[in-house]
Amino acid sequence: VKLLHEAGIPAEVLQYLPGDGATVGAALTADPRVAGVAFTGSTDTARAINRAMAARDAAIGVLIAETGGQNALIADSSSLPEQLVKDAIGSAFTSAGQRCSAARVLFVQEDIADKVMTMLAGAMAELKVGNPALLATDVGPVIDADALAILQAHAQRMDAEARLIAAAPLDADAANGSFFAPRAYELTSLAQLQREVFGPVLHVIRFK
Image 1 (cartoon, helix red, strand yellow):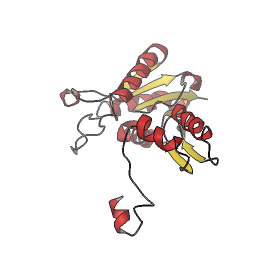
Image 2: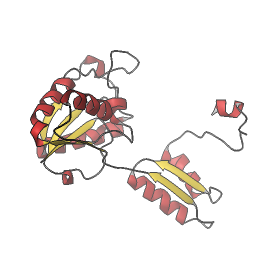
Image 3: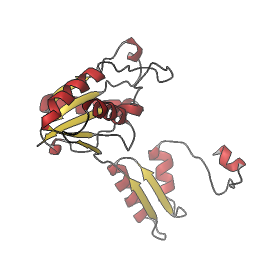
Image 4: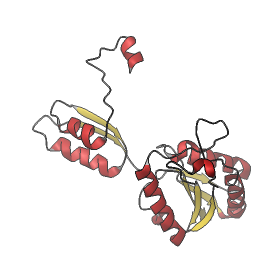
């Protein structure tokens, strides 16, 4: 923002207000002077913003919301398993899986499914979870304790309802902080996912 101001954008046009959504965000979306909101986050929060803007005694505001989704990677039997596993891990676990573009579901043709899942487990065993400032680290922490709790609850449900393909190891470097071991589960149906899981969890489904 400072660089944009230096480049000539007036401070009255662009301002930076860091803060919790329940305080800063709620105040902004309820203010009749706000003509529009561009939001990235959960579907529930997007609905709350929509309701807050609709309740204002003002012109109808514009809401652009990018919310939860199940980004799928689809691989048939012509796929090179080594490349597929590399791409799946890179997409699902980079930035601790906390990117809107991260792969959440891998659909893999059953002809190569067993081989791919075996290779996936082997590759995940080599992942280093820890301090993202270190070059040796592959996966850092998730954003906060609330995000960690949601992922832990999801993992607990998946442990009961799906087959664990692999979980990356956690060592002493991840003892303190909001670290979550990347996991891969085999599901029988996409219906087992109730909403987007925003973190390093890959769900694998076979198809014929």
